Length: 260
Image 1 (spheres, one colour):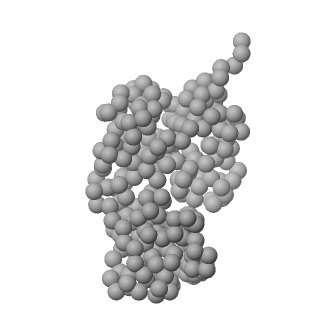
Image 2: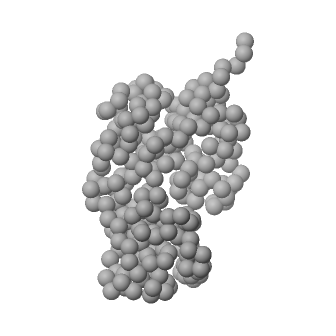
Image 3: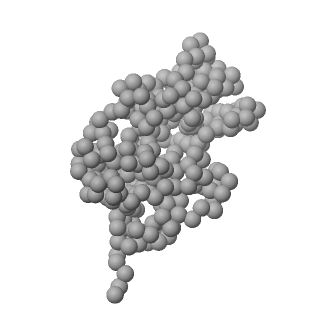
């Protein structure tokens, strides 16, 4: 008896309100086709089973799930690849082999890859799963949904033709200052917008470091609460920021960008 044809791996975006005080209706931020596809899947890979179930519960209120929550198969990505991704940012991350997580796809089941917010594998873990799917001959299908980096870039007024996402900046003060100056040089000399993020409770500390070490005429943009009713983007020179150094709150995810 021949083996079943492999299922597909769907990259399922999630709303950007994870961990926020308020939530937006899913229909405001995700297309019907994305929600309907997610509802028919019963095998998942996610950062956290609890948050994945919470997202599926929200979908179920709009599009009945193909199987009850208790019968959804959810495999968790190891914590080592969570914050800094799957490409060696954390010790052990480069050695992680995601092929075992795709066993159900090889048995013919379509699977969903989901992160806690936004598009999996973009500023979120999951790229190791996508690479493993390609290696195993599993078709990868990205679905449409919010991507915080692109929303922030579009709202910043900075160069959207040449940009880079550099993840998290170092927490050590001296290393962070050196990194800020390196990114500023790339932005000013080559015109490449530099995008980065931080854990929300460190938003104020990162803004303070940026205002301390960037040149007065460098443009800095900060977008917070994207897609929420409280969404806000401020894009001004560092000199203008210093005159009114208002940081995003310590609970709301933010995207920082600098350029010219």
